[in-house]
Length: 139
Image 1 (cartoon, helix red, strand yellow):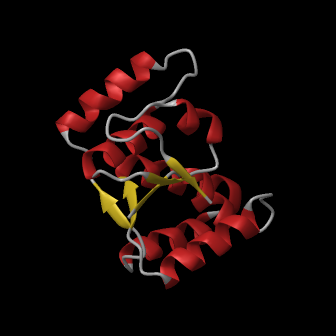
Image 2 (image 1 turned 90 degrees about the vertical axis):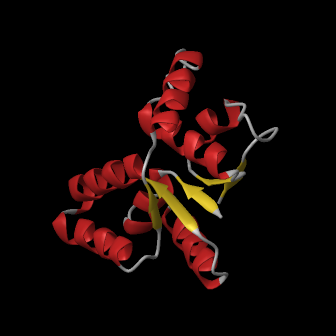
């Protein structure tokens, strides 16, 4: 199981993104290996917004259809997730971490996931999760 941040999703959708090929190949491999890809609801919102802004409504529609086709599993946030997110945002205020990244971490901790798909090495490498020594950052 892998929790996905928005960066690789946006890069995979955008042919002009410098991380497009790496991200696209990563998602193809994960799909072939039948690994579950988890998206916090905040990642869905951020990704949809950014894809629409950068690539337009047709690309956003394709992303939403992938969600409908259950290529990704959307996980809702719970009150304990929001509490953990608040603590993380406060603890890492000097970065700042932000709501979406904090949600990825909170979901990973709750589901005991150690692998995160992200292009944001700075934030996710700095955070010390509560359930493991460090996250494995993919791709």
